[in-house]
Image 1 (spheres, rainbow, N blue to C red):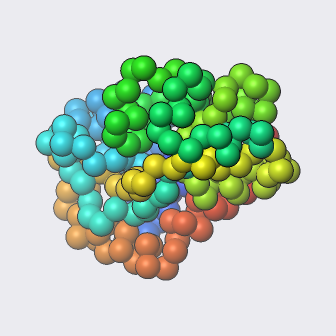
Image 2 (image 1 turned 30 degrees about the vertical axis):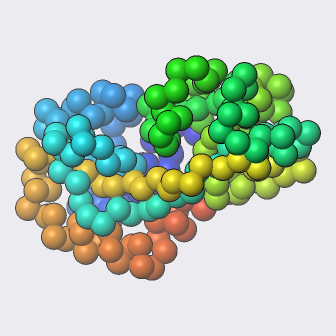
Image 3 (image 1 turned 135 degrees about the vertical axis):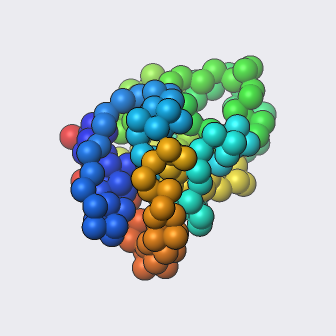
Length: 210
């Protein structure tokens, strides 16, 4: 599914609805979106992880709106043999472009990382033997694997990273939304408490299999 029909677009539409504001969603690569946000040509982004560099350039809205568990997934005959970080060596590992996972994995250039464009592509490449495993968000993957009727073919590896990934809403310091930070904080807090963001994510991945 494209960006305009994707999860981030749905989260942005939810925020706009809660703010009673219109929204125009622009489809562009992540790196360009970040650049345009810093320039003030975009107002808001979602799905952004907290890093020191980005924190100095963007306005993060607290609290984070989701905290997700990362998991490695492998084929049924391989998952049990991946017991430690060292067992990742020699494996072709599907990773999403521009994503940050955990240390030391992100900076480990000795690993064979294969860039994938989507979670569905990761699943299909794994089933075809084009990759040996992939890393993605646990709950989203389990939902999609069940939807694609391949839950008997793909399992979580025995080794799993301990860290969770948190996603934030960020705005440009040149945006009109700077005056709405308090409202955004309240919307995010309520949305988390009510499970709105998780509901949107679950519904998205249950629909994804095209």
